[in-house]
Amino acid sequence: MTITEALAEIKTIEKRIIKKREFIGQHLARDERLRDPFDKDGGSAQMVARELQGVKDLEQRRVTLRLRIQEANQRIQVGVNGETKALAEWLVWRREVAPPRQQFLRTLAQALDKGRKDAQSKGMTLVGAGAQVQVGQANTVNVFVNINERELVEEIERLETILGDLDGQLSLKNATETIVI
Image (cartoon, one colour):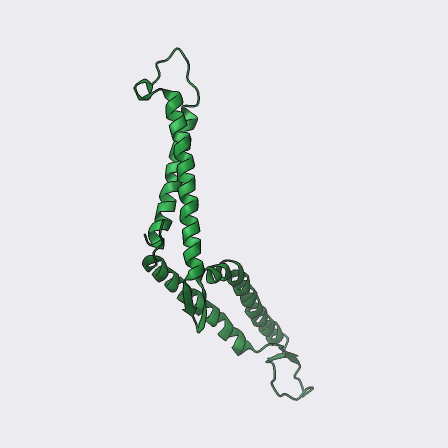
């Protein structure tokens, strides 16, 4: 089965587990004066026991599927933006590194934008890193930026490109790579 099929089965398993747990909860006890609705199937106690076993079996199936997916993700190599890593490594990077990095870079860009507006409102000039200016010219006060703004914008775009390409590679690999259960 493909990884995509396994992921879909995991979702189905979760829904089945929920239904089985609801059934168990509804039939946990019965007034002895009422007829057992599962008398012909061995009784409510046996039905609850079967459903409990069914939940255990489904939980084990889910664990097995997740392990096989994880094994495949460690085996599959993916190249994104000239960098090749195991898919598992890319997934951890996408989940734990990329979001705070994106937020940090956006915060830097917003701070520079705000700084530029504040400087302009005060008649000052915001000067980029490495720019050659004469300090103290008449009526000019400069605020120096200690980061290359062009490189910052390029890094933001590069990160967005990597994430987009990674999503495409992930979809492709999930649809084409198979796992054995």
